[in-house]
Image 1 (tube, helix red, strand yellow):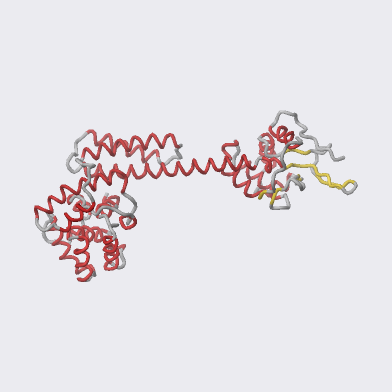
Image 2: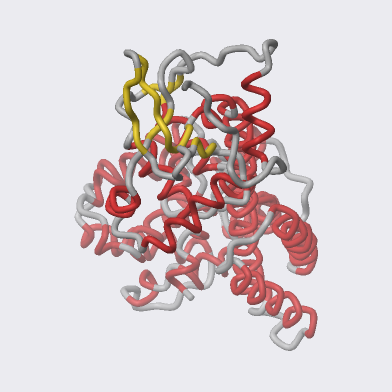
Length: 397
């Protein structure tokens, strides 16, 4: 009376193999596990097992028919809902569709059919023993370790793909910024057009869901392109030491020294940018950086608002500092905060920061407090004017 057939349809499916393994006297009894956690893991790794979201919807409906939250091998694991009940719990799925997905779950070894002699699904008690005919959920419990391992691999691969996508996105943004800088002096270069095409193709490709191998190839191409652009704009990867850069900034007192600072520090900053230090808006506040000045032409080309309010053209760093001194009282920044900024950052860095703030002035509620926070970061060595300016590049374009 208590015999349950393995399957009425043959002995070659995955469910038969699992059923035989469970009947083996050497098969270890699995520990009780949360059925919903098993389903979540299987959802993560469904492509590894050839399952679709509709297959999992039917499986979820069957799991909901099991009265306990945990699947325990010592208790009954056979559910016997009617087709109408399964369809209702599968969000109104048509019966023919539901049967197709049930067959898929059985063939993949996640369910075992325990059919009655007449093929009906029911439970009855005979001499005090409950006998059930329906769908056996024990394969879910016996394959839980396999499912969990596959889900962990899928999560790891997804994290790697996300990291690669982020790297590709940053490299593409850096390439576009370098192209904008290079086109100022090299507008007709065919090499720039090729690299611009690469950036455009990357933008188009990133709209799709790419695998890790494709993302790695795009990353390699973009790294080579960024290196080419770094050499194209004349950047030098040999940066001076942090202490030397700070000393040079605090000793800028003449037009010649300011020009020297631009010529020596800009390559270092540009090399840092080409190596991927450019981040989203206000990332210059979040990370440690060597306080180097960006090229003056980049500052004037990006922070255009300061020239609008200045009556005379700005041609050098002294002109930029004079313009910031002239416009600053109208911005609501107090004299004390401004003098502190010039003392801590240096006049050129303070003027650069003010120009960047003026470019997005409508989004800054408290300019004085904002500048004070930048000064505090500068004291800790965590303020980078080139990052502040480069973060405005998308707005400038």
